[in-house]
Image: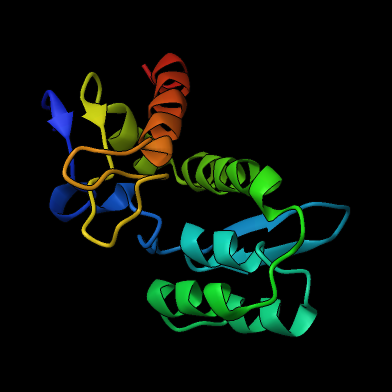
Length: 153
């Protein structure tokens, strides 16, 4: 499965995308008996942008990750979002690959390729556009991959 660089999370690498929907929803909780199910990492990430309970429910119930993203942009944003967004992304990604052994193996098997979320929608923070950007998502995935490589030899 691996090659030197994976620059698109589509096709055979669609499972790396936050829009990827596995058969089983993500189950994430922050307190005792306080778990929610999310169809995708994108739903989880967008829901965490707001503290408004009604907006959170709408985002979580969105039919597609694209709709969840649109709703997340429209929702009233929590004041500390800039400080916590990377931690939220980390939680979503870790949960995705911790809860799905097949996805963890597929991620592991991308080694030693450099993972880069190349995109056309202008995200130069979590991804890159024409190779330019911080690629925070790709870097997080490579860290998780290294952890999975150690566990799933």
